[in-house]
Length: 213
Image 1 (spheres, rainbow, N blue to C red):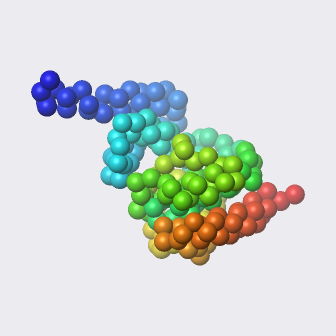
Image 2: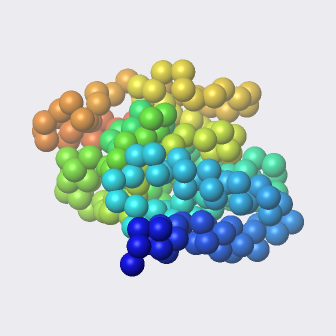
Image 3: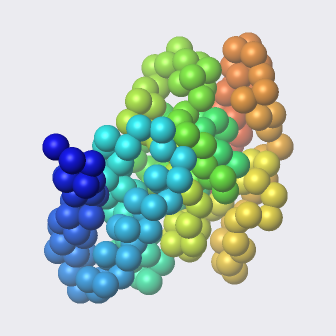
């Protein structure tokens, strides 16, 4: 088989077109087909910048695009928000923001919807982070670093930043918090555990404020 033939077979374009068609059906009447296709291809391109293995990248791009389109429809009032929306943002979306998202899901369950993103997303979730979350029963195997996009910020009710500076756009009517936390990539395992426990305390307080008794 020639290199050219392999390139045709391995091209993600047909797979992404099919993903766009599926998503366009799901978001009929909310987002037009051209926007859906643009979001799908943008999502793939953004994830491909840092992905080490691209075998399942198209399916991850479809998942990421679905979340972005949901956020877009929510920000336009086309999909009702059943629960508060929280967005956690750090630099690489491979440590702090992933821990915060996982802990929020554990503490709040379905009473809060959580997203996370990175201003400069990394290649994968840090092994030490996955390990210390696994110690408390949290599996992040299916999670992956995602780039920060305007649509998820618009959809959030609360935006929590962690060391990403001015990367997050500001919109009126949203609650912004900045948590000063050590970067897990610079810490040993015990240090990452301390960050995890610090985040858990902060998440418990945030959830209590979002969901008053």
